[in-house]
Amino acid sequence: MAQPPTDQDSAWKEILRQYFEEAIVFFFPQTAAQVDWNRPHEFLDKEFQQIAPEAETGKRYADQLVKVWLKQGEELWLLIHVEVQSARETDFTRRMFTYNLRIFDRFNRPAISLAILCDPSTTWRPDSFRFDYPDTHLSFRFGSVKLVDYRERIAELEQSSNPFAVVVLAHLGAQETRRNEQQRKTFKLNLIRRLYERSYERQEVINLFRFIDWVMILPEALKQEFWQELKTYEEERRMPFITSVEEIGFERGLQQGLQQGLQQGLQQGLQQGLQQG
Image (cartoon, rainbow, N blue to C red; front, top):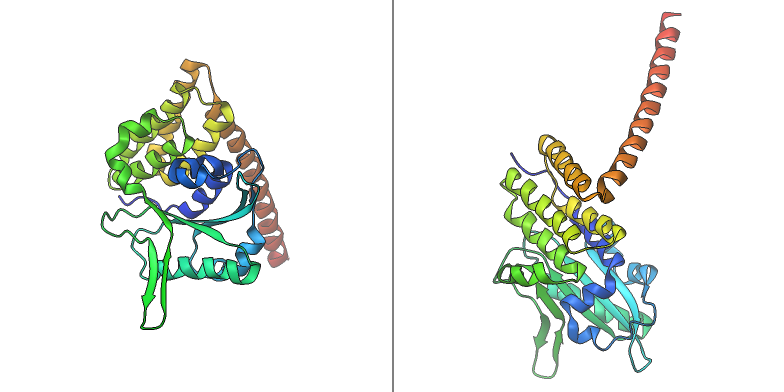
């Protein structure tokens, strides 16, 4: 059976907003070391739409444009791009350059461009855009990390306290189990158990679970098994962080479904009555 499709760009956008500082510290420590994290960062959604209008109407990406402050007091913009597509993109480096150039041209702001590449290829490693002519030369380099490289660092990820170690584990687990649903269910349960064992706070467990659940979708039959096993585990630990939230959501969904069914039934009955009359 094929795995159901996932909307991974939305999952990445949400987790980046929740743990932006942790993401930069985890993936780009040199840049993170220059930022004053005591000052709040700001997501520049309107500005990003101006430099990337195609992102709203065309192919979707998990991009974020964020304003931070350097330790010297200077304002700096970070352009974070998450490439979640399964195949390499031929125009990727040109798009990274174009977005950076547009920021400088339209807002007169320098920007640090950073790419998180989620594809499984070990050979595709874009990190620059350049051209070279007799009288003109251009070389643009940007920060780039490949999640596939972390396959050799699983033990390190499992020991890390940074929430983005869990994000990477979930992503790699989703790739490795895409053809084995039973293995995916086991991996997913073990990953969530690790959240409790590392004593994450309730909200962090819920936040990370949302990402894990988003990228590691199970077919309906295994989903029921998963929830039952998770509920049993939470009851044993007396920490119903996830299942209590899901039960609330389920009850709301059930009520909405009953209301919709009632309205549809009334409409059908009215239509039949009019036809018979």
